[in-house]
Amino acid sequence: MRNVHDLIVAPATPGSGGARAIVRMAGDALDRLLAGLFAPRAGQRFGSFSERPRLVTAQLTGTLAHEWGGVDVEILHWPGPGGPTGGPLAEVQLPASVPLVEAVVAEACRQGARLARGGEFSLRSFLAGRLDLLQAEAVLAVVDARTPAELSAALDRMAGGVGRQLQAARETLLDLVADIEAVIDFSDEHAPDSQPIAAGVFWKGIDERLVALSEALAAVGLRLAARDSGGDGRLPRVVIVGRPNIGKSSLFNALVGREAALVADEAGTTRDWIAARLEGEGEDEGVACLLVDVAGIEAEEETGGDSSGQDGIVGIAGAATAAARAEALQADVLIVCRDVGDALPPEPAADLSTGHRIDVVTRYDRRAGGEGDAAQQGGGQAAFRLTSSRDHIGIESLRQAILREVAALPGQATAATLRMRVGLDAAREAVAAALEIAAAARAGRVHDEAVVASFLGRAIAALGEVTGAELGNDLLDRIFARHCIGK
Image (cartoon, rainbow, N blue to C red; front, side):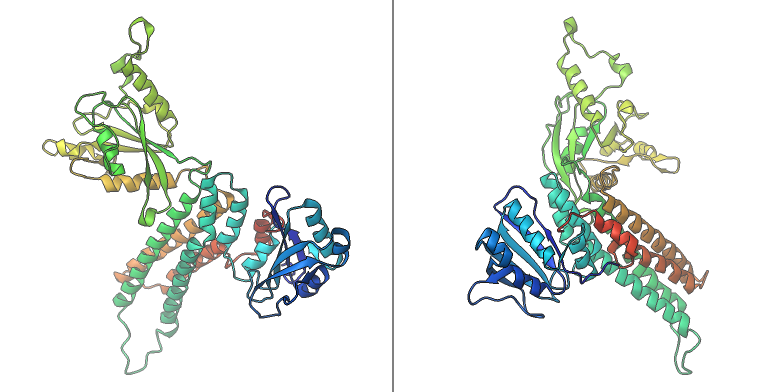
């Protein structure tokens, strides 16, 4: 590991734009470096070790003053050890002149500092426990953000909510392993007058804690997956398709919770597409998409493949169908609808499938004699989600399914998010395996505490790699080397 006490310096702001620039300095002997570069105003001084941070107004001094004159600067000084990097740190705010910034950095290096490597300030904050790995990687995401949506997501990650959730999950795992290993270590050492806890009672408690932990990890996984959905600045598009007049617009209204689309009994009421934002709450918080309702699309054999009107002019219905197909082709997720009364599910959107689709039966309240119930089954599993906009059947379940599908969209995650997903998936698999064995132990079929503890140990290690609690030096160097110099 690199020496975290080296005196380092680097510009922390880009070389163009803005009225002020920042030069960041950190490391041992920072007080000597500050005294050689800046002269505090009368009545002000730099802080001493263990004192609170302070803002010092100063002027350039020494060689810098000779070349640049008495330029005023403001210095935010953390004497240490309570600062952002766990040691002495200073941020010098000065006029945004590239030659002036370069002169300050060069003079600092002449007086004993070295130019910081990429991500070295963030690395020191991480090693000092001021940032977890998720927050440290969010620094890079903030720098690289190209849109307001990307910046908002990166800043949200920097706030540390996900990191705290993962750390809490890891602490829970550590407690579980400690309890299980205590049973292993002391199972044969009960005092004569003591009564060992019944195995069923013990495993019932372990089982309940594992279930709660599994649910917590699933919620964090969904939240992490949602961080980079719509990473190009647009929301993922979820398009509702199906033949005309089967309740698609009613379903759209039920999902968004308001009368956004016009609904009527006549076919072809929807002529153009209409969209509304759909956002998750609770465990789905952070997931968002654009839900789109389009005109009905007839199967090719019903339309004859010809949507033209007289004299080759495209009619209104044909134009609506063409617009619907064009919109569906842009979909990230398709909601493919069929009516509960359809004997066989027509496929008006078969050629439009994105690979991410949810099949839905609409107007389930109109089923006759349980006919619709049979349509739910396919190959032993539910093939269609049964919904009724009128009776609000299956609407909340469908909404959650949409948000889960959006959160799982590929190709939109950063390298950091992909690494987090791998670690989380490994932890969840290990917890699931432990839960299965704990359930068997509770039922009296097995009594192998060591195997459960082993799986939980794997989960602890996996989460440690996500949060940074267990990382090798080489991996840390690769992660932080992607950061900009000065960060």
